[in-house]
Image (cartoon, rainbow, N blue to C red; front, side, top):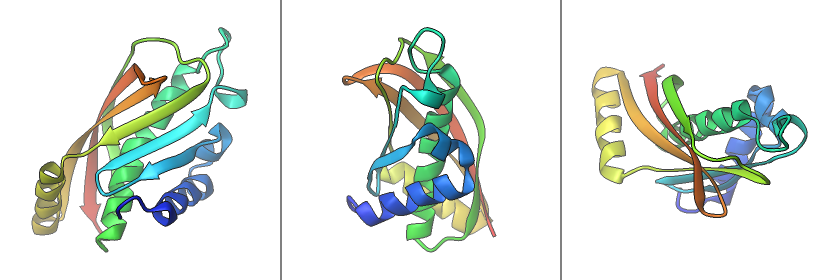
Length: 152
């Protein structure tokens, strides 16, 4: 995938077309590589709370879409047809987000390889994704998700 703008646009289009919340939130895929993903949405319109900061549900949704999006696109790149589900996720909100929600996750290649081998051998596997919601390079929330995949 490298820093593949085409894959990033493909993921953004997929989310906008199949997950209406992503489009309503103004989600954009900023960067997508073999081991890194970065999504962004504004703190405005559908993503703002009564305090003028990012709505907690928007932060959570962005983090979940970051975890799901990375796994989904990496499997597509490897021509592995599978259903991808975020089966469990827990978030810790650390500080308010004021202007833009950036959600980032990085995967170690060895962790992904182990997951992929298990998936191909058994038809089912899970991987843990740690997603950071950041603003001005400061962590504002952290989500830990268990992404479960079954081949189709």
